[in-house]
Image (cartoon, rainbow, N blue to C red; front, side, top):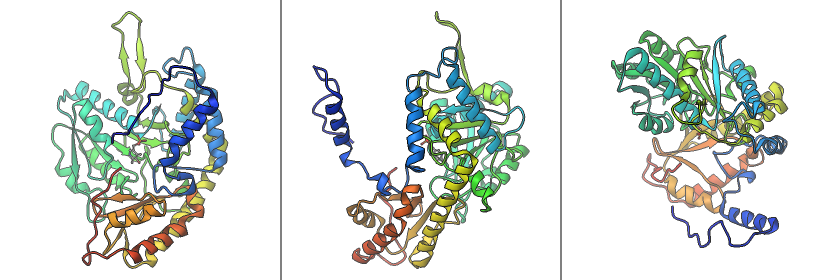
Length: 418
Ligand SMILES: *Cc1c(COP(=O)(O)O)cnc(C)c1O
């Protein structure tokens, strides 16, 4: 989308902070009122206290640069401590390692890069293929494009989870890795990770678990007694896992982890270069220079919340999730897509055009997340929804009453956009 920019950022003269502040705030006037719970995804607010700690920590480390551990050993230490805790939460074994990245997209990049380089070194594979369910995140295709890899997406089963037998049928001599999500982004459903991992072991392939959205929520939901299937590095056959701190880790945007079962896998995810005048250049991440701010914010949120804080937040959000589920089950035209394990879910609205409902809901300030396949609405619960969940469903009923039903049994999600 093209915006009508009349002036650039760089004025001729200097500006005062007050004027700058006013302008920055003005520019936000068209943004969604996420703090008022109007957003159904994209945000993982864990409370004003958590946000404030994260911002203070961010500010302290904003000008550090993790590209040099020599200059900033502090950030390296924060990263090491984040990885240590993540490995403890997500089934790391002795010898497992990991990297703090800028987000799920980068975590997935490093897992694919590692797999590609190892397959090239050990098996001489030049045209690597990765097999995954159709619900896997687009980041896999993005990086396959950069890395010269091929992604084979296999339709999910009738239960909307990975169809392992169909995935098996797509394995060729060029396959290097299989993928499952825990849970998948569109519907919030866990793929059968243990079955996919068994397939990987049998076929001598690597297996990546994309736990970007659920990785820092699932372990706590499980401790609280909710049913969560096995999904982490402790599952035999799983070789890497991605989990976003900036989702249900409640950190600021720009923080995720990728964990590797072995040091060799992590080694292959790095980039090392020595053929230029400035000496050995080595990065764990895709980015070079970046801010240590997101790392410090993530570390501070972990330290601030502790296991107890994560358990408490998870319990609050799971209760909200249960409330949403009861609203969904009380309206016969709502059909839940599968049975979600965590606080991300999708449901269809039979007999209504979702694009029409979405426009009507926008008049009440809601931004709906639409799903195309099958046409459905997505809900990703966060703490801003505590005051809003009933209002959301009230408004949805109001909008359904005023909308014209479409042909029986049909609905559409044709305007779904990320
Ligand atoms: C969010 C997400 C990603 C991508 O992560 P970004 O943080 O947006 O880069 C990948 N996979 C899943 C399952 C996700 O939820």
